[in-house]
Image (cartoon, rainbow, N blue to C red):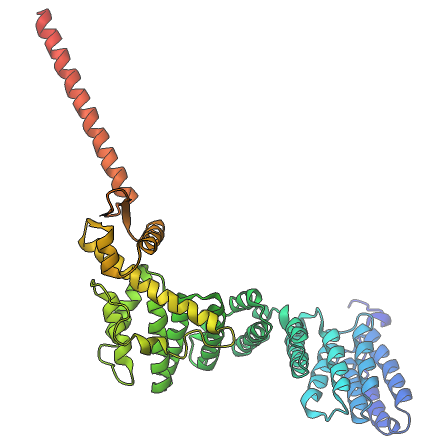
Length: 447
């Protein structure tokens, strides 16, 4: 049997612990300072001897004594001392932090300063320790809410800005999602839109699609609407409203779903023309074919106009109802400037649609005739044609001296390369045939 020196053997101080705890309960009412010193002397003995259960118990007991006597300054200093002890067991720190965390909402604090000092001490104890990362995140959030209550949004935002809860394995998916929502909300309140976007990318989109996350999903996309409204990005706003429509439909909130779908259609019409936008227009048009109640008929008619290859008159019937939608440029980041931008964009989308329709049916048209058809000036027409050509929507050439606009189909680069390859092959074949005929004539002449 191997010999183990007495100095390396782990000792059990459980009996002494029970005696000490009973004595200190009574002694703490007379002299708390001396009681705490006695407890720390016993804590050192347990720590050196490797008696982890007794060590954890005495640390928790120290914290409880301070709380029972409501000596908040002593509680803070005791927590700091426990944390800074050499080779302190993580179980002792976990136990102390857990019991201290229970005081946050259960204790009637003498003033806010005492509570902030306690939370700050606990936060410092948890800093950099993975085994109390969940408690650390919650403490940051507690302090952020206090700063927000005091009107200091900047301090509240800074407090939770760098807490990377998405990497914490000890937090549930729901708590992580709620925490990220708080980070986004505070950044939006601070008007820090870049960080709002960065924080939003931490949200796991697959997670919020799961059952039980409907409230998180709804709140998240409401915040994203606020962000994209500031960015004046109609396509992203449209997608966010569609997500809100899905949530409301799942929760059987028909009126909310109807309002979300109306806002979705409005911003879909305002979105830039591309394959995804056209596809979504046809899908939502099919969705609203049998749902024309509660003012939905106007929005359905708008989708029909923009999906039909016919010129749209400006203003068209029902346009006032669309422009009066409360979601147009609404929210804390909206305002008259954003709303006016979207109203101008609405007119621009109608003009662009009309130009695409003309380009479909005409190969060439006079500038004056096209200006009359879509009711804009020549300078405005040239601006729109230039922008649409640059974005690849249409292929157009303007003959200013003749006053004629020529439309031609946009050929993909693959087709042009294929034609060039075919032409080269034909030329090589002709050269080979010619060479063969020349050689044949030479041979006949020599004979």
